[in-house]
Image (cartoon, rainbow over all chains, first blue to last red; front, top):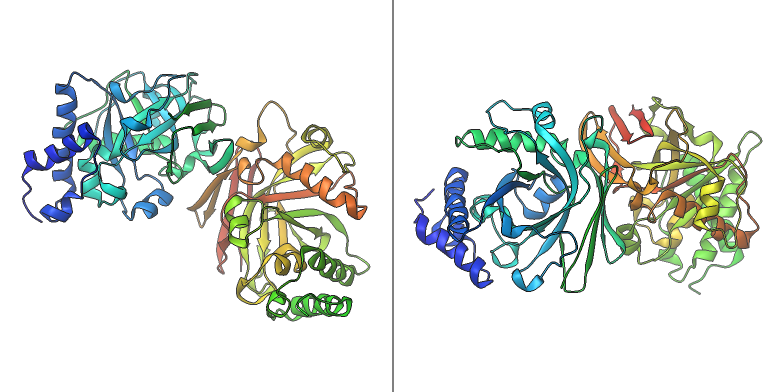
Length: 260
Length: 263
């Protein structure tokens, strides 16, 4: 493990984001660093977005399914923060030129009704604090060329957070077993992947609970009104201008976006 | 000659019967006959089924195979395949499955459609298939290959009863209703560990679409699907190789669970 020049390293990611030009893995240039250091770098990246006038409106989980961990060759989940400029409103297009190498995933999103923090939060606590669940499309954009990274790299890069679209129907999760809900991702009318909610750490609420416990170790938490993307059930798919992406989740409805 | 003659086809049906009886796999037919067509292969399958139809055997329905895009791409085809399901191959929910009864078994979780009325092509629509459906069941299929090491091309798997081994159904038939069968979620576990998840759309876009495809495909052969038929509509995930002494469970939204144990 090496000590990493935090300002320099985070500036590389910030510049990559601003100029839409991919950079190379930090671990390649600075050597391996631990995940806690990676979250320190992530905090600098997020602080830059806030300094640019954006607000933190939620969080997302990454690498929560076995399929995804295999695709990225890592063995642990990760989280990142969502800012308001990442939100794509219903009907608005996904502008591919605003990203380096966008990919999409189908997810279940939580809208929190209460603050949520603590080192022993479980899935039931998450459900009790949830105002609504929604289908969501997570738009990933790694600032590393070709999505080539290790776990500390992707954590520093705010877990590839780039955009998100949530369904416009808010559904009360009480009485719904999110574990068994079918999730279908379609691109241009073709089914490209299917899954059930359990693909995300066994249950989407377990995934959010993992996030809350991870945040607690840094003395942080989630607040009421935040949107949390609970993690992709399937592998991610690259999108091109003209692609129409639809995520359908049983009982929760549909969310779609057209790429431009 | 790279396509089989009628005598070759008869011999292949016989070879498959023997491979099933002895549980000793045979080399792929397409090694010998690289240009063997799907039509040739269904002729082999027909001969095989005729040989399996002893006095107390029955055809209870059909299974579809190669219903997902990844599977079709792997075999370079753009259509599913099918085979009859035999009454003697049905396990009860919760039953023990003897591994020794198979050659190289794998398991797939599927949605099984139960027909309440007769259905036939040639222009069967999804709406007609929906009308004819009395309900859906949680199901498991054990696929097995009488072709050595699963080294199959399309014609090999068609001939070999579409690699069908056995089936098992959940304990209830759930009527269609105000839900989309394409969005039925499924969670597959082995000894409690999550192995795969999927949704109904994985097989041909949805189970009822699969039924309409089957009715239309069987029509030129003069086959009608009778009321009470079961249709195994295709895997919702990649097939999972089986090991001995494990509990295999698929749980479906709305349809409930189905469990088998290997011994």
